[in-house]
Amino acid sequence: MLIPVKDFSIDTTLMAGQTFAWKRLDDGWVSFIDKPILVRQISENELIVTGETSRGEIERRLGLKDDIEKIISSIDKDETIHQAILHSPGLRIVEDGLWVSLLSFVLSIQSNIPLIKKRIEALSSIYGRKETIEGKEVFSFPTYSQIYEHPELLKRAKLGFREKFVLEAANFLQKEELQIENMEKIREKLFEIKGVGDKVLDCVMLYGMHDLSAFPIDVWIKRILHEHYASMINGLKSYKDIRKRMIEYFGDYAGYAQLYLFIEARARRSDRMFFKKN
Image (cartoon, rainbow, N blue to C red; front, side, top):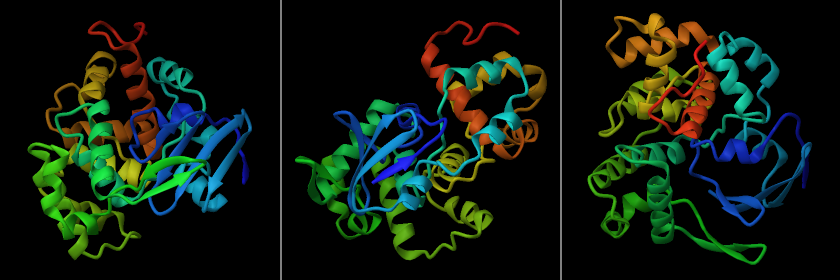
């Protein structure tokens, strides 16, 4: 299946640290939630997709329906975010779904991207279903039902203190019916899960549920805000107050601003200034 795209880079999007449901496979990206699918970008304006899926599903999961011109116009308010936008052409925010994103970001607590990937791979090899796509063996992403039914297998993944959070999340979703249409209710209910604090919740809402107003604040974002938006957040101490201020500033697409800034910060990887002073 061929899918036309515009102003999109699958590598920029899937290497941004926002998703752990895709894995690089040769010259493409594979994801195995229900059925294995493989997506390659064969040109600037075209994707080729292998596997049992639909164009609509790929467009939804990769954020291809987002009006990126409108989004950039909305958030491009200062030189700092402007330079971050220029650094990541073709970026989109994914929509991984509630469980996939919840498991991923519970595993992110006091961790880093390589370790999160390693833990996801371990859980997939333990709980996942093995299939092949273009001759390559892949394992499905573990479901919360599998973890709920066989919690004793979690020890094999060596998750440390995160094991109890993963089990809590799986048990919660196994027993709780959430109405996806009601985002505020989802936020309220997810806070009941041990291990789900403000940052994890914002990541789930942004990258799992595609709530583009969510603004997760981690160590990278904190540093940028203090370096370049200090006057805006001066005197604010709590996570919620800082998040509220940044959402007020960037608006309905604050989540895109957050991801552009996050990618730029990681790319610089320096204790010095991430950006040239305005």
